[in-house]
Length: 275
Image 1 (tube, rainbow, N blue to C red):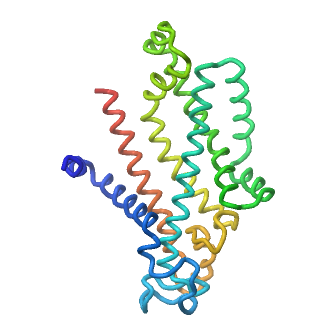
Image 2 (cartoon, helix red, strand yellow; image 1 turned 90 degrees about the vertical axis):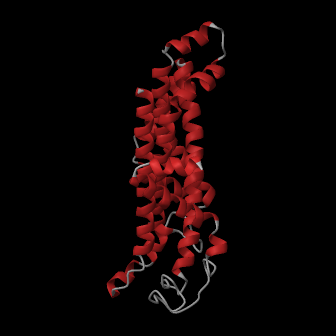
């Protein structure tokens, strides 16, 4: 009951963002139960119009677009969340340790991050994937490691500001261990900013995966993916068939929905800190 009262008090943009995110999560979780066909099943002629047993029509091979949209949400969102979680695990742990311990560890990690950041992310990813292949595991590890550099710099900057605060100095004087200070004093106070960054990083990684799939180096067929669906059906536009707009619109809508929630969360966190 309190949850619905809380939602009623939120701005309209938050409600819109929440609806978009919830719909995508439901589609991702229950795709096998909702989809009328399998993601790689050929069910009709090429590029059928919406209707005639196919809610969004069929694609360039005669597969049901609605079913592939649902499975695409499942594949793309699951991979994006997994990559974001791994990137944050690496970036936050390394960033907080580097800032708190300092010295050689801080210098070594920061120089490694500087080297990785000096390469454009897309070019570096394409180079690595061209060598190691585009399996799901390789995609997960490569993108997570590259993206963790951004998380490292943010978490390190937050920890550098927090470690000079009085409550951290008091913990040091009490003889608390470094891990205790990080987990009990620094990390909880950095959490609001890191949570907001998690939403933004998810959007970036989600769009990055879609871009790689559009280039043919993302999630590999026959698995459905919104980016590859745009690429595979791009030729339909020439015939006045707008099937590629469905996955393109889904990519845009999910990004907008997550950003609406992140913006509201940042505003609310700033209000709480100032009160």
